[in-house]
Length: 461
Image (cartoon, rainbow, N blue to C red):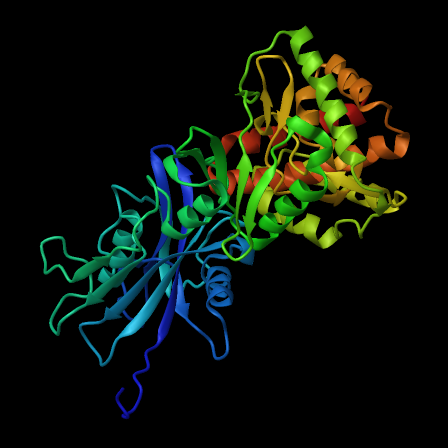
């Protein structure tokens, strides 16, 4: 060990804001302008750490200052680390690239004195030129699915990426995988839970930051391995699977193992076909809704009800309205604000165990017609009507489905619950429109618009 001065380097944070475009994944890039390093070149939104600031806080702050988007710490995922030496100046630095797939707001140029262009570009083919070579090294490692790179430029090397220039990027692989296609540590965790794994298939839902693999054991058994996109979602799903889901018996998965540090779980596999996108005749769909009502009632009664927490603050609703504003129809904002005021005047409901995302995409239907309920990562104590918000989209224009659900649920909603359901549906719709438009998710956007139109019609009857 050397006794001389210790080597210290600056740390940069870089934001890979990613969305699904019509031709594949896209990333947000901006063009530097003014009296800054690499002016005229494209780069990820980025910056330096402030004193005593952690990396996650820094990338969230830089995102807000440069693009105007708001990011929850739970949605920040480490992507790539680059050890970089520029062609001018002294010393090297570390750049930490973070991937974010969920945010609030529409990206826009917030610092026109430092940036004169911003837009979405195809990640695989179509990155703009000229681009900072340092940024391109990080994106090259990210596209290759590798965790790190060394990018040491020599004096006289160009600052912009040059396809025909010297290749200074050394891509570094991570640890070997355990089993076919599983990250090493996750594979070890799964094998401690279920034994040797002989097959793994990535079956992740495209819209979420969570990763899900269907894993097969040496004896032919099948389970699901899930890595959550944040501690909040991990803790919620683990708590629900331990405490509430068991009342559903074979209609919900069983928790086999959980690791809080890796935010991962192994659960039993359920058989059946996804209800999402399935064409059902009216009698069959009515039976489905009746059975969903029974499942919801059982889940809501899994633990004693308790006093509900504070209702959503008007400020939060107004922030969602601002983000969704350009995409709302005439009268939508007035409708939502009126419902927010009505919501504040409602008596506080009792909170019950809820699924949190009860909709067709989280339901399987077996060959016997029985339903299975999946994905408890949004489970929490909430109003009973909160579990009916997204499902109520399927009731639009089909009162028989609503009646079938409530028949299975075992009771009708009282007037306060009817109003609360409308309010919660409106808040969810505005949030969905803001999210869907900023993430290129037309299905979520359209569901929000349908909901607001339904509420307009209902209030003018």
